Amino acid sequence: MSIVTLTDIVSHHFPWRDKKDVRQMHIGLMEIDSELVISKVHNKFIETILGDTNIQGKKLHAVLRPHLAQEQYRDVIAVLKTLILRRDVISTTIHKNPFDCLKLSIANGQGRSVTKYIRCEFSKSRHYEQTGRWQIVIRDISKSVRISKQIRRSTEKAELKVNTMMSLLQFERDLIKEFLETTTFSLRSIIENLSSKSAQAQPVRQRIENIYCIVHQIKGDAAILNLNAVSDQAHRLENVLSTFNQRKELLQKDLVSLIPSVKEIIVSVKEIKEIFEKIVEGGWNSAHQTADDSMMRRLKHLVERLAQDSGKKVILVDDGYLDTSIPLHLRRVVNTIVTQIARNAVIHGIEDKQTRLTQNKTAYGCLHISVQHGKNKISIGVRDDGRGLNVNAIKQAAIKNPLFEKAEVAKWTSAQTLNALFKPGFSTAKELTQHAGRGVGLDVIKSTVEKHQGNVAIKSVAGLFTEFTMSFPLS
Image (cartoon, rainbow, N blue to C red):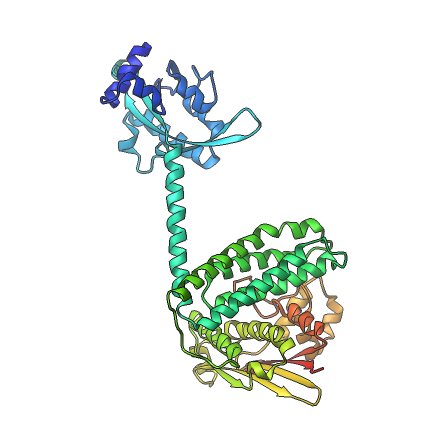
């Protein structure tokens, strides 16, 4: 078959195009025999798109194999086998045809690879019954695929903005404003910990622990406001940071590895801020709230959401937990700790309605937050009337954990066993979820409290309650 015949084939498929137009289109032509061997009938475009000038005599799947992912290559082989066995046009016999869009990785000659997308259309040659040959029209659809992906990303981004706006409108304006201000401050702190320029920079392990505390709080604050993009990103970063606890040595490069994830959160927070500002400019007003109950209102939103997601009923009891009752220099740290403990209590401490009723408890759980002022100190208590902590289960987990000596664990009192939950890297949680389990993050709580010259204690009775008490000096 001559080049003129190839042009006739194109004219048959695209009768409205003249010869010049065909050359301008990203279209290649080839023939394969019944054994899938490529004949000499093919044009230069095929060689160009495949980056191979010597394809004649090779089998089609052998030419494609170096450029395809393993899974897609398997699909190609399956379809070609069907082509041979059924002797029918692919598009009418295959439900999901990989040749509709093949993703190729082509070397560009400079040590790099370029991704291309092609579509292959099979038809029987004019003398198919005598020769068993197939004609293949190959189109370069890379531009169309990329445009489609851009449109899809733009659509997803627009949907995310709408969802974010709807989430913001569910809450009071001052809560959103405070979240943005607090999170912006927190992200700056993360950046400071990532930087190694400071001569007073802390050891890498301490800086990672600092970042973990901050990310944990960002996740909790975002979850309260249903800002799932930020809470999900923070959760993924928190997972990475948690793995560092198991490492004996941490290096500067470990900090550098966190930068992309931190940037991701920064971009999301910036987008939320832009949406918030546009809503405010549009005249968004929310009910006036007193200035001294913002911490309690945030906590209430968190508890309501977590209870709903868990299929539980939880009553939040406020016993003096007001912004004005907490010294200004402690408000951020107290808010962080109370939020974490409250989350654990609702998700893992308080039972569901049916379980509570079978144990002669009320159908709803109770989460009690209290603040007490002493002569020179302030104490904050968080108590839930849930299942309590299982001392035996904690001991068994400790025995299996290399952090502890088995002989020592066997001698532990109940108080010592509960205090083991504060050990870095120790958790009784069987799996890591977006809501931290009992033990997950308690080491962070302890270190945070101690940084402010305070102390934390746990009391618990299995089946009755769990109570955390944090005490801080007032001066």
